[in-house]
Figure 1 (spheres, one colour):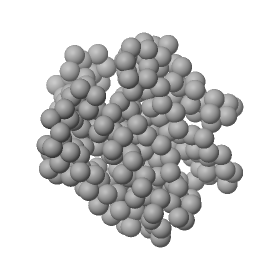
Figure 2: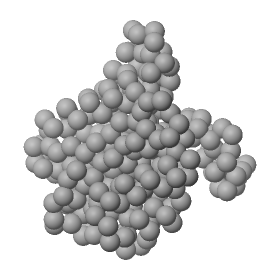
Figure 3: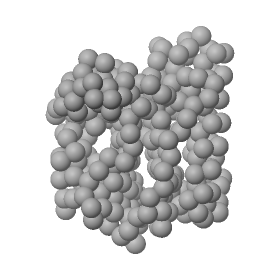
Length: 249
């Protein structure tokens, strides 16, 4: 398995409220994550950093994630725990009131990948069937598209594009969308914040992912393209390539 993580503040924002990473557990399996924080004065980065830090610690201490059922249960339990921690933190610290974060996470083994997400950070999969988004945004605009009130094209430029219907840490409990997929040699996952998906088309993502560049160069090319198209938001991504080789950055 080859993995790379990259984050960039973009061209407009004064600081980076995204956080993420790729972490190994005791069995050598990876947990890839991207979190896009929001709310309050510098509270967004508190929410995303707390989330990634907590899940990293829990993951690095775990082992025997041997089936999709175990992986799904682990993600549900840990996301519920960090949701409570974030919510309690926002109640105790006035400067963090209303803070929250998106989360997209993927437990990656050689046989399967378990993906959990809340919000509009996304996971894409490239395999023999092509390139597709495999998470569904928890956003107002996506709900309008699903109910036929606006078109997918209208959604791209909708003034309320960034309104989330679900986020981690904003309420006492939260629902995690979760699914497990099978993976094969040469399949690729892309996890990203909306700083990338709002600025780079799926066709461009696929072109870069399938290029002959190294994984590090692919990550840099995606960030560069998002910045070239305006870079109004922080840009964070993880690429996982399923292969017998090892490359981690």
